[in-house]
Image 1 (cartoon, rainbow, N blue to C red):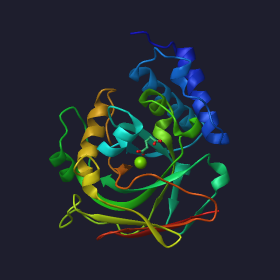
Image 2: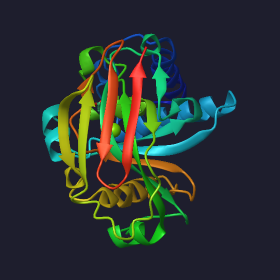
Image 3: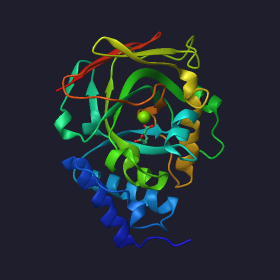
Image 4: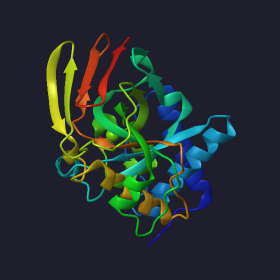
Length: 263
Ligand code: 0L1
Ligand code: MG
């Protein structure tokens, strides 16, 4: 397998990050580098992440993406992927999100995990995740692929930080005791109209499974999930396009509501 050299990795990290910061579309990078590997794709993502930290940004968490069978099929990709969350991605309940800073955002309802102890793979399983979970919180992820018309393949998406751009957290932080994350229901409304429904099982059968998979994927690079990080477990609803002026409200069974607006 051909692998990209360090200079090309650095160039592509800037290519994707510039598109994110200045909100413009790019064509998928595998068009120009068809022989790049999954390792190259993650090298590009980790290089962009290091560049953000060097500029003074804090990495506050991680996300799993493409965790539902329906979404993997829709996008034609074989596996889920992960990305990182930088400090400026984070918004609270009632936020106003500036849509001009984004390209073609979509919203998806997710359950976020915060761990009380680090979690390492390989061999991490759902029981390890449940034992390590401090609390869960409702979240809405705003994804914004930098690729034209959301047209991509898995390697291109990974290099583009798995389309991460913003996330909004609200509702209540709850211990998982007494919560059934598999059947936990979610109703998404835009401007008062129900647009999506779902239950936690949409995420690989149980959202904690996605967190275990993430720990195992990170282990391939000698990395782990850390206590206190904010970890998005993957979409419960289909990603829904939004426009300026839209009010988004997502009601989570047992966890409360997350609301915000695009301005
Ligand atoms: O969070 C997600 O599931 C999105 C991952 C990237 C794919 C996309 O942009 O649709
Ligand atoms: Mg997501």
